Amino acid sequence: DAGKGEYDHYMRKEIETQPTALSNTIEGRIDGGDVAFEDLPPGSFDGIESVQFVACGTSYHAAMYGGQLVREAGVRADVLRASEYESTAGPVDETTLVVAVTQSGETADTLDAVRNGAARGARTLAVTNVVGSTAAREADDAVYIRAGPEVGVAATKTYSSQAVTLALLSQRIAGDVPDATPVADRAAMLEALEALPAHVETVLERERAEPLARDLFDSDSYFFIGHGLGHSVALEGALKFKEITYEHAEGFAAGELKHGPLALVTEDTPVFAVVTGGDDDEKTKTNAIEAQSRGAPIVAVGPDEQPLVDIADAHLPVPNTHPVWVGLLANVQLQLLSYHAATQLERPIDKPRNLAKSVTVE
Ligand code: G6P
Image 1: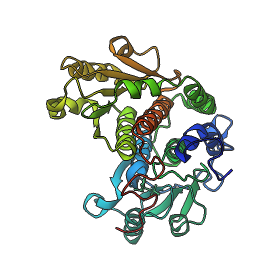
Image 2: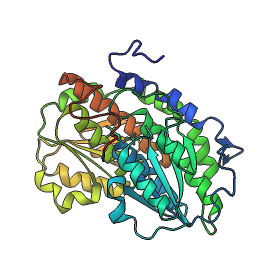
Image 3: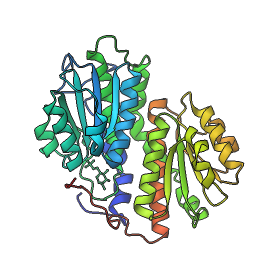
Image 4: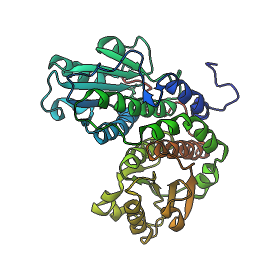
């Protein structure tokens, strides 16, 4: 089980086994239309008034996903780069919950940020994949994402399992914060979550990323855009792409494209636009058209029913489900895109140059 098995790379294996990883992440955490964490029963977050997520790299993008859901549940939340914690944290006290999002539980920047928060009186929680890791041992509480071991340096399944864990946690926290407003259609959201592993399976079965990666081969640069939850997916899509292909890729909040990056857009800069079925998709479409009118090929990443799909030059489809989960399916398409682009470039997929799985220095 620990080896590559039938796969050419660990990364491919870790992408393909996400349905199982996600089933493990979810198991036992949905109970009668509500969220349940064994070690964090109702009342665990009594006294908490705001949340600070601290993380690095891919974990930061998962934290962005969770942070938006905590804010939508009516709880103040910031998502902070762990390496910038001192200058960005602002006031911290015993009403602050600092959540360290770290796959390995050993990232020095993240450990430093959470220690800093604890020293200032905050409650601390580690969301990690590794039982017994430093983050899990040092934090007041730990929640495990249960993704199973990840060997490829570029994180894939741990991002998906982190985002799902944080989405569930957002509802658990909101349950304990006075005046918070847990998602109105929570039962529908949780029902859709139970179907998420099967929806990932559908994405994997109907894979279209390989020919697309070939068509777009040799572009100058690759841009990824999205609004809201789609923004965090766009940032993660670009990070994955640059990590393993060594090609230039950037992710932007879709609305920011016109405030600078548009100057770089030509027919040789494909734009991947993530749509999630949320209220902002019309805006994403408008922003994508701005790039298209400058010659950029537009790739819509989202469900068939999206208006963006009609104007796009290509489409990476995902099943239509609750808007909270669509971005995670879009991310699987982008993982496959990066994988195939890197394969065509004959990159060392599992061990990109200059990068480490876990960075234990600041
Ligand atoms: C390293 C890895 C990234 C990872 C980041 C945070 O930079 O190369 O893939 O996202 O560390 O790792 P963590 O273990 O804290 O999630």
